[in-house]
View (cartoon, rainbow, N blue to C red):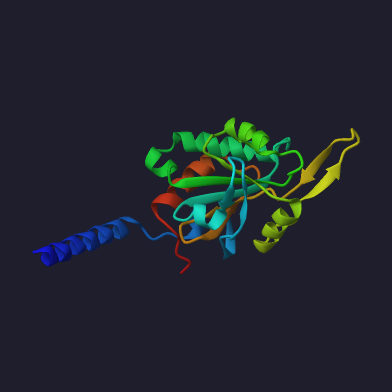
Length: 208
C-alpha cells in the first residue's frame, strides 16, 4: 500500500510539474527592453561581507531567484540612486508572488566610506530587502573583471572630496544562473515593469 501510494504521489507530482512547464510560454531575449547580451554571462561566484553581518555567498544565496546585480556607491549623485529608486518603485507595484522571487544585490565600489551601517541606511530608503555587500576595491574589481565590467576607480574633485567612476548597468540573472540582459542608466520604470514579471514567470529565455 505504501509503495502504491508513493507511485501515485510521484505521478501526481510529475503531472503538476508538467502543467507548470506548459504554463510557461517560450520567449526570446529580444522581447525584453534591456540590452541583450550576445553571449549570456554565467553568474559570478563570489563571497563578500554583508551589510547585515557575516559573509554572503552570491551564487548560493541567490540560487533560484531572478537576481539584479549592481556595482555602485552610496555617495553617487545620480546613477545609483536612480537605479535603486526605479527598481524599488516597480517592486512595490508587482504582486507579492512575483516580487518575492526577485533579489537585488548592491556591491559597493567605495568601501572606504560605505560601511555596513551606511549601506543599511542608504538601501533602507529604497527597500529594506535589498542586499548590500562590501569588499576591498581590488576584490570588487576582480569580480567585475570576471563578468566583463570595467574597473571602478577614484576620481578626485576640486573640493578635496572624491567620487567613484563605475559601471552604470544592472545585470539581470535568471534562474539558470546566467545574465541574458543588462539595464543601462536611464532605464524607465515602465521598462522594469515590463521585463521583471517576464523574467520571473517565464523562466530563462530560448536563444533558438
